[in-house]
Image (cartoon, rainbow, N blue to C red; front, side):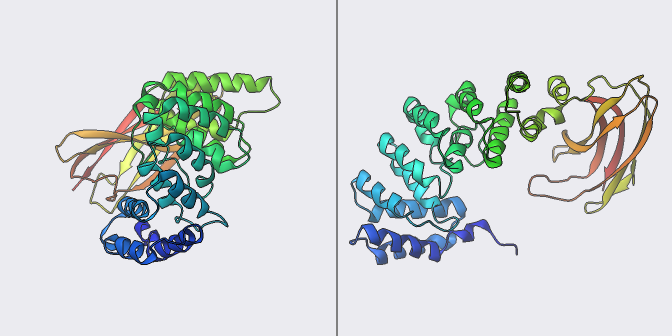
Length: 365
């Protein structure tokens, strides 16, 4: 069995935290903390393990939250190994909301050891104005992990993170911060900016295209150029959806002039675990060169018998006037944690420049 993430939170983590807490709190009950955590740890999954350790910290650290917080932050002195600092961030998330000033100040240090992107969510929900003040200062911090937090922590669709209605209702909260980070020297920070924009694009597609269009325009007259990788990654969902503005922004042809000479799927019938091969031959009927975003869409059969489309990237191709190209694509049809295949007739569409131009199919037994 593959290593499970939950096992990163183990007895070694508990012992290391105890050792750090004792340094600044000699009365810390090492044995009680250890027994409380280990009595339940093995039966829990990852997030529940994190929460167990954080809540046990609250039980054995001083009842006075600012005093406990000082010990928690002090535990990071000298650095911590991977994963060890996550329970520290969770402690602030679960027990520090009534002390927003102290908790947010502590995140400046904690997020250098493990991202406070989850920890900051309840503060955005309950102390939005104050939290935004901290976020605005963090974009200029010397440490890249601190600068990343304003972008990652305010993502509307942060994976594993609780939803914050203010972020969904008003994307400008995050966009204000992203603008300040769009030229960040750290690729990690710029990647977060792109992921944040991709989140926004799912509910405000035209807004994201407009923002990136403006950033690119600003770059034309500025010493700093916007990162092409940032733009492409931010638009990845819209490109798959065939959004004309996103395609145009990346230079793709949005009204392709093509003749589809072949679009086929073999075998026509197969079982889960086998592969399909798509074959495509197309010819340009344009008098000018066309930059083509070529994708395919599989209409997966659900348990109800209805279908659900999923766009898959194929390739990009620069096709000259009258030129032809032949492409093949092999895809394995196998069960995954994110998708269950069901028997039935699966349509496969060819999508070029966001337009559906041809169709084939396969039957899954």
